[in-house]
Image (cartoon, rainbow, N blue to C red; front, side):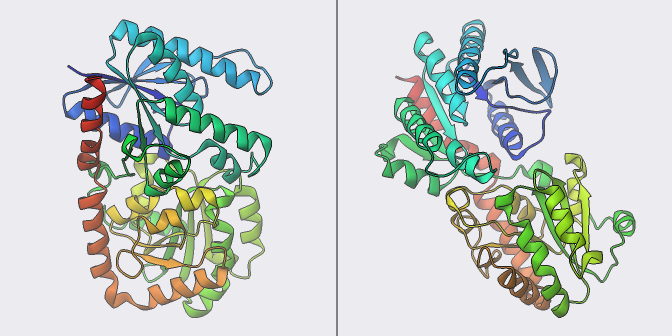
Length: 400
């Protein structure tokens, strides 16, 4: 029986788009009859035992390391993870290492894989250098940015196979000289066992939040990073309210920009229409989806958002919600304007307000668009079918 060891930055029980994608992959592989396990790097954020089972999945942990300045810290992280992966792979007799970005995990898996003589598939969900720019910890074109990019390219070329989550990342790697035949696209998907049966409107939650039955609710559910463009959504609310007096904005989540966004909202002339909910348990998220007419994703235009497809719009489509998003490359891979969703110009609050006002005014077309978007997810972004993309690659690697 094929045994796949997933090499991860972090995992369940931590909640993030990263951990939910990992869960979906591992669950689908286990359902297929493969044996799967995960091992996390020292950056896994939650304390716990050296090995724990979460939601039926086994995750091994790498022990913490002594603090050190960069880049010594990263070098030690790679060494600690490589040693843990090698020991586990020997004990468990893993057939294949499936490493997931960031690039530190790829380097550790390559080191262990070469020592053991087993193949390595490296999966990229976002380029680490661009993610650093997106979350405000890096600057495009800096020495660190260029070095990280070179290391990423090295890992991609050294791995036995490469998976990426979207065409934007694939095109970028090909432009770096990577053989297209080496790369597969395994797009973000939705676990329809989790998001496949939208609940009815939670009237008690609506009353708790002060949302009336005839309010037009725009929602953002996700992390509060600068690149998400939530400031543009808040800035659009006065103009939207002028066209749609019952419009309300529901912001669910948290993150580095939370304090600044709350200050911006408090200064808005329509502050009473903007609701911050905070972070909610994952099992409660669908109750907030049930209150939203439109899920809005106003991502700013930059390399990260042009290259990487997000997960949240797909979850919204699966929940039968309307989707409106900025016209950046990552969104265009998921949303066909006027068919499965609405696209508007990025970095432009007036465009956000105009697109949302037009969408709210066209209620006659809502049901057809919801059905079309849901069918797109079921057909093209369902994890039960997406997982089949890995199988021929695994088979090829295991024959090497």
